[in-house]
Length: 260
Length: 294
Figure 1 (cartoon, one colour):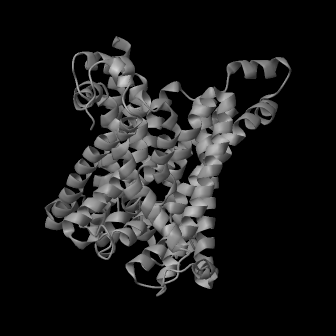
Figure 2 (cartoon, chains in turn green, blue):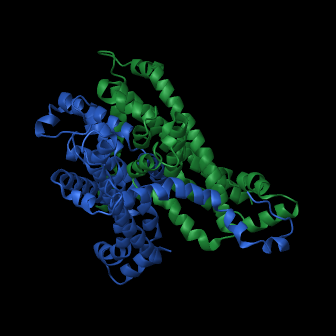
Figure 3 (spheres, rainbow over the protein chains, first blue to last red):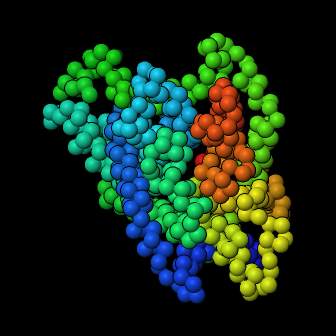
């Protein structure tokens, strides 16, 4: 009886989650009347606007990842080594972006960094790009911090630091050549998640008027029939790829730990 | 970055200030791009155009259309949180202890990780391609079963259509968060209950549910906050025809409607309060749940 119920709910769940995927893919192939074709994908991938916005978002994602690493790794390391009392505070701050809706954050940015403010970032395209990437880094902060903190837990930070120091290393060397390589797998898993988040992000990019992939998708949505489905398939494939790479990175961490 | 002396003994003699300097990049970043913008929204909600203190903005939330949007958002978030909670719990329960093959577990968790992050614009497109007027499932039902979905009054671009779409990321989030709690249930507890003559139902009612309810309710609050802050999915799906609170705020920031700028602050402030309370509830309850499940 329970087993029948178990299978039934599992099949229902599978249907609910599989049908939209199958449906979207099937829909994206329907552009030619009466037969399946990849025409839609050719249209989408060949669209210069797609290429431009996608490239923009990829670059934004990469910059976000670099900023995230530069901010999170030293902080998590420092809290573990020198300021354990500050740990709950840093942890709390890093979780705040899950509480504050991105749209509120974007609103705050526009008000705080507008052309009349002390730091008029929205005054230039470069400044707005910087603001966008900062916003993305905030969105990624909870995931990045958790990944890095989990990675640090497996290291003996104090011993590594003292060993490096006794060999004459400064803080930059310690962080860049001792801690970071040891955290590579954790940092990578945070980075892939960040990439997935940034590629599809819409609200902040739209409110800051940046030519990113998310606003492009919304623009295409009401105007085309089959292209949105193809875009959804592409976006899903990217998310899937990022998550796959993330799992791989985590497996690497585990394998490493076993070896030790 | 401060350069440290080589000897550990001398490191201890460093002034306190340099210890704090290590946290500076993180602190400055968080202050500039997270805390100050949020505070400026909160402060702005209580300021009039001259910069004086006022409650008018917050009082403006009482307007008919804003009350309506708030109520719609709360209902949507509640519905998706409750249904997502129940469905996600059921899926997590049958996979962890319902007698399904263990091999299903890995793929389920991986998929949940993907789907929980598959919100936003593409998700809306996927549902239009599936359940829209010409969607895959709609056409399938019509051609194979002669069943016209849209004749039943179903519409993807409606409240329940949105609920269905949100469930695509809410259920997996529930599965991800609650599975560790279900794993934490000890076999000894079941054995003890059974040896005292408890049936399966009694065991669930008197042992499992009392232990798990803080975790479940905590996750419910998390799902609520998650749905409440989501904008992109709803915008891409319904345009701005369904006036949810975040959509209203979006339009306000863009300057399309609501001429009163103070009202934007008030809406944003209201959103922070609601998601803040939901998150606080979630954190407190989930911390309570962990006492048992360690």
